[in-house]
Length: 212
Image (cartoon, rainbow, N blue to C red; front, top):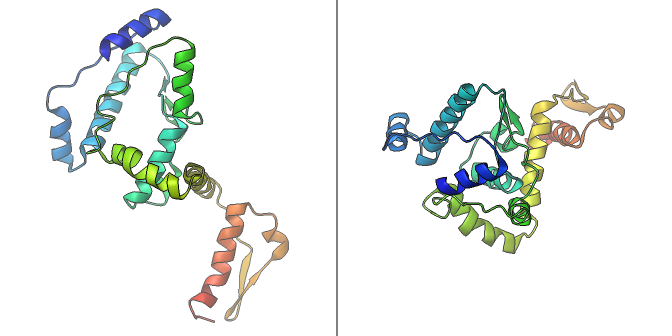
């Protein structure tokens, strides 16, 4: 993999910085922080990326996360019971990190590489189903697709809706009159789809909970 990246960077005339972790560093951090091997590797990887960014004196770094990574991330966070905010998935930008391919499917990036006659490598650990993401990718997601072919679009819709809720706090047009709630229809019609859903849930919850 390293030799291939060296060759590709040479062909594209792109500078290449190679960093190596000490043997056992991933396992040690996982043990010390009581986190998974995946989370540990990710933390160390980003630490090295930040160090390399400063070494190269550049403002931003671009990663190759794709739309396929996004759907897997949302599914993984649903699977593990993550927080509501975490269901927004991978952000297109996080501080100095840019993800320009986040709306491009993995197979399209692979097709582009073939079209441009670029040989790409796949991380040797990507097929190890002992890692949760790989287990979901190879074992669970194909089964879900058989039951719901549009599951990827549904997962992306979840992420989009959560982003909208987090990014836009709308005032819900609900007022209380005694034991009853009142909904201002005119103001309701100006809300986003997500805002309308929230308004209806809040408006109806007293009735469903038996408080009225």
